[in-house]
Structure formats: C-alpha cells, structure tokens
Image 1: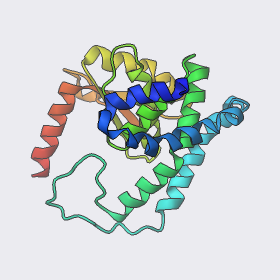
Image 2 (image 1 turned 90 degrees about the vertical axis):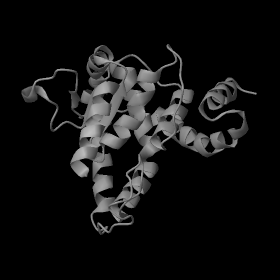
Image 3 (image 1 turned 30 degrees about the horizontal axis):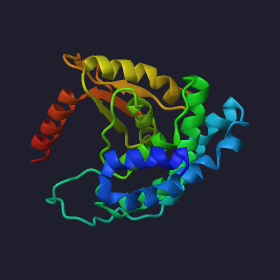
Length: 228
C-alpha cells in the first residue's frame, strides 16, 4: 500500500470511523483530479495564476445566470449548512463541485508561492470533506489552518461570503492575517470579527471572514431572532 493510501486511510478513520472507508472512494477522485493540474499550474506566471479567480467567478456566473430563483423548500423549514433551498442553490452546488479540483490546485500553488506551504493530498481530502459538510477532527500540527483555505477559497468564489470560525480572538486575528496573504494573492479580501469590536470596524463587503466561535454563536443567535 502506498504512503498516500496509508495517510488517507488514517485520516478517513478520524473523519468517518472504521466502518465508512468507502467514503474515501467518493473523495479520492477529487484529489486525483486536483493533482492532475499541478504540473501545468507550477508553470503559470503570478498574473496567470491570479487570473484563475476571475475565471472561476465567470464560470459560476455563467452557470447561474439563467437559473430561476425558485424555492425548493418552504421558508419555515429550518436552515442547515449546505442545504439546497432554491434552484440557484442547486446550480451553485453543482458548479462548485465541478470547479473544486481546479480551485484546490490553484489554492495549493498559491500557498506554495505566498506562504511556502504546500497542501498535502490528505489535506485535499480534508478540504473536500469540509466542502461537502463533513466534520474532520485534526490534532494540533496536522494542518487545520491550511486545510481550511481550500473550501474557504472555493466557496468565497460564489460572492456570498464565507466564514471561518476558530477558537478565540487571537487565532481569528492570526489566521486572518496569515492566510489572508494567500487569499489576497488570489484577489479575495479578508475580514475579521472579534469580541468588543466597534461598529465602524465590523467586517462588511469582504469575500470571507475569520471569527472566534463565541462571536459566531452570538451572530447565529441574533440572526435566528431576526428571522423570527
């Protein structure tokens, strides 16, 4: 068995448990496809690599432009992460899935150039799992911060904003600045939400946000109250 398979097998056990290794077979093709872009992307100039973001956005716009915003679920159905509530949601999910391997490959090449950090295959696997609304348990040092850049970049392309929730204010600020270099290189802006933040400084108009989990819980609670 290859080192790749060993690493993935161990990761899948953390992610899904021993009885669900079949799920790795559903994710592995995305990793293989993402790796197929590596040789071509390493030869791109900085401007060419950065231009991939605009290309992806255009592909998303083209996929959604003629899709009616028809509801598939009633308004009183509780909202869940990744839920398909409209025809546009369905079309968006499909185009993001089609873009995923190439977008992950772009993010990895950008990470190599900007951060001197290259995503491993098992981190591709973790990023794909997160995009498909799975939860991965990873220990300190296993690359959670870098894994998160993959689905965050992909979902930010849709123009709806993407949130990265971390443990506390310190990590939210650190990661927004650290990983923000990668996002900025690819043409995306990064905001920060933290405790006791003044109104004038609150993140608005950004492609993605970093925030501590306590602020996320408060925001979600406030949103629920407003929705009611």
